[in-house]
Length: 308
Image (cartoon, rainbow, N blue to C red):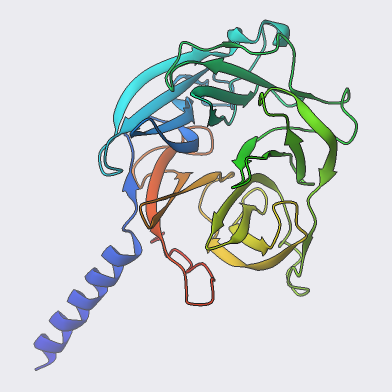
């Protein structure tokens, strides 16, 4: 009887472990900072190319692209764009966390090239070739008032009324409207207000990696709380906020950064983020994973449980 009980206990433990670690690895290649979109009948995942960095810093100089027709298997389409496309950034430009958007059959690629500038490129195809859309930074610190000390991690959201917004920044989240051509700022850069952080948790604050998506009429602003950080979220009735803190999506991971993206397609929501695998990787050599995201009846996001 004891042997049977032990066997049952082990089986339950194994099943729980499998359920807690259901995330899918996108590629064995080291990549991070996913930006995922459904363009022209296919899924496109733009990423920071950790494979070719020094392993001592986030100093890669190009971006990687993966594509999928079903969100189950991903094809590596190679390093499709170099940071050198932004000639104004100089020889020391770094290819950091990217973003993409589509409007009027044009595809826009947004990316920091270090800690002070965000560039934007444009193409007729989701995978390029891209060209510099402005010949100058879209956002630059200290050129632009209230751009913050480190305008990185761009995220673009186009609302149902067609208005596009750019979110970015570390430590203090920023938002600014974009003009219809998607390559100019419209109005002032504003701080994103997040209310309701738990008073008993000093670590619970905005760190980096802002992202906005909309679900059943509600705006979800998600982000990393720091280094290391949780992925948490807040909600509002407007894309400009103010947002009310709601909870944790992914708890702390054994890596110094986290950066995520969320895509809703045909009634299902999928979360992408980076981490290290059980056998390789680290703070500068990261892997991208995906997992299903679900909601409660009152619109709360169910936390994703990952085996550590």
